[in-house]
Image (cartoon, rainbow, N blue to C red; front, side):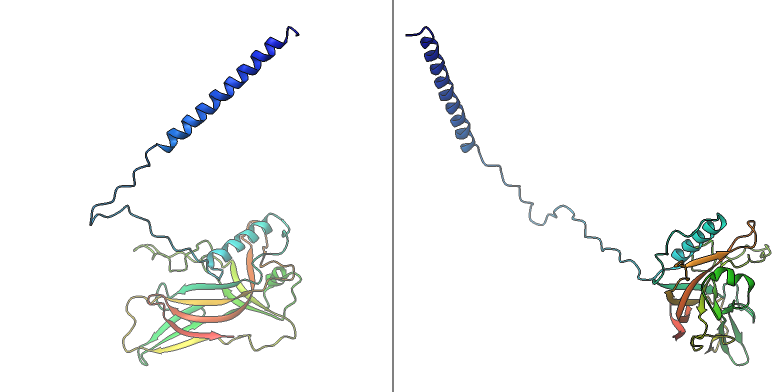
Length: 281
């Protein structure tokens, strides 16, 4: 027999012993787990005791289907900055085709007069409140052709959006007592309908203002604040932009217009939210 045979026998004995030890260890561990006590159930709260407070699920915020003042003013600011910097539009605007709702407050300083874009007057003799808003006709202004670009038009009508530096659709704070009100800044942004040549004239207002008369027995107290509500759809220009601008010099703020299809106009009482009169196209 070779001298290696005893060594091989000893190795086999060592391996067999190791296997036996391994089985014994595994069995002992399994037996320990089987006899381990089950975890104690959670203690019940005493009768009448309240459990931990559970926060109620918060309702999901539903985005408005309409573009508002803030979105339109942001688009105007971006278009104005791009124009002032000589930048070409970067593809069509994503606002084209979207619907919008604008609220333009008026009567903030009291009754107005003919020539104001929107105003109210009270007639003590007839005890009536007259509300009036007239679209601006930009058809013959020199700069509107520059704003239109390749968009053909026969007439352009619309409304200026006052104070385009503010997203608030409410009246600004009144001027402090003793301070003379400053002259308003020139208008620089509006929503406009570009009526194509040969198109229907039914939607054009021309010299016809939106007007409504209310019978009121007592003069309005304080300064009744009303809103001119405008609604419609962003149609955009021939180049696919929702807003286009033009400026005479780099030192003047560009004048910008959003091309829209105006299909809703209303007078709203800001205090109660009641619609006093409305027109739909």
